[in-house]
Amino acid sequence: MRFGVYGTGGAGGHFGARLAEAGEDVVFVARGEHLEAIRSEGLRVEMPEREIRIHPAKATHDPSEAGTVDVVLLGVKTWQVEEAARAMGPMLGRDTFVVPLQNGVEAAGQLSDVLGVRRVVGGLCATFSFVAAPGRIRSLGQVHSLRFGELDRRKSERTERLREAFARAGVRANISEDIQVSLWEKFLFVVPSGGVGAVTRAPVGVTRALPETRRMVQAGMEEIQIVGRARGIDLPDDTVARALGFLDALDPAGTMSLQRDIADGKPSELEAWNGAAVRLGREAGVPTPVHAFLYSALLPLERRARGELTFPS
Image 1 (cartoon, rainbow, N blue to C red):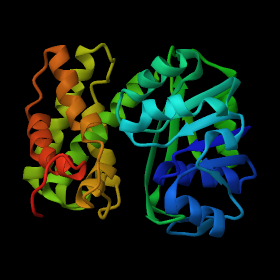
Image 2 (image 1 turned 180 degrees about the vertical axis):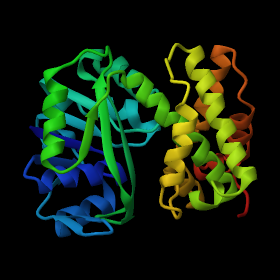
Image 3 (image 1 turned 90 degrees about the horizontal axis):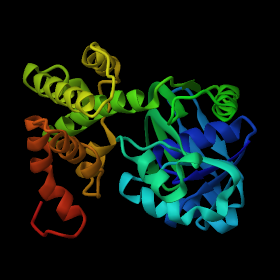
C-alpha cells in the first residue's frame, strides 16, 4: 500500500515512520522548519528503546507533489480537518480512503461531509508522541497502537489490508466492531484527563493520585458516558472503570496533547475536547458541569493563543 501522512505531527510522524521503516511507500505532508528538517536530515522518532530515522524521507508541503496514495493517515489538529479534506484532492485516487487520527468524535463526520462517506474509515490512535524539534518526534512509553473500522460497522477488505500493513511494521492495530463506540471510549478517556491536566498543569501521575483531581477526572468521564448514551452510542457499563485503569497504567510523567499545547501557549483542541463535551451534551439535554468548568477556565488561554485576547502571563 502507498501511504500519505497528511500532518506529520506526533501521531502522524510516529506511525508513518514505523510504516516507512518496514518498507511501505510513505509520503509525508508537513510544513515550515519541520518539513525542511525532514528533507535535509530525515524524520527521526525517538523512543525509549531505540530511534527510527527515515532518511531520505519523501516529504512535501504540496498535496499535488505527493501523488496518488492508497490511504491517507490524517494527523492534523481537529480545527484543520475540513481544510485538509479540501486540500488533499490530488492525493485521492478512485479507491483512496482516509483514516483520521484526531482525538474527539467529530472528525469522521467532517471528512464525510467534504469527501463523501465512502472515502472515510473511522480511526483513532494511542500514543504519547509529539514534535520535540524540527524533524524529530519524541514518543514516550510503550503504548503506540491504532484502532479503525468502517463507519457502518461492516467488515471490509481494505481495513484488513491496513491492519496487515501495520502488523508488518510491528504496530498493534485492531479492527473495531463498532468504531463509534471506540471513538467515544477514547473521548471519555482523554478529554477529562487532558482538561484537568491543563487546568492543574500537573502530569497524569499527579492528577490520578490526588483524590480531589481523580474525582474530577472520574466525574468528567461519567458525564461523557451519559452524553454518549443519550446520543445513541452503546457504551458498556464498565467504560469508566476501564478508562481509569488505562489512566493508572500510563507513564506518570505523561501529559495529553491539549495540556501540552496550552502550556506552550499554542492553539489547542479545546473546542473539540471539553468544548465538544459541553456542546454535544447540550444538544442531547445532558448537563456537563465538570466540562463546562474546564472549558470556561481554559478558554481565556485558548483565546490568547489564537490572538483573540491579550493579557500578561
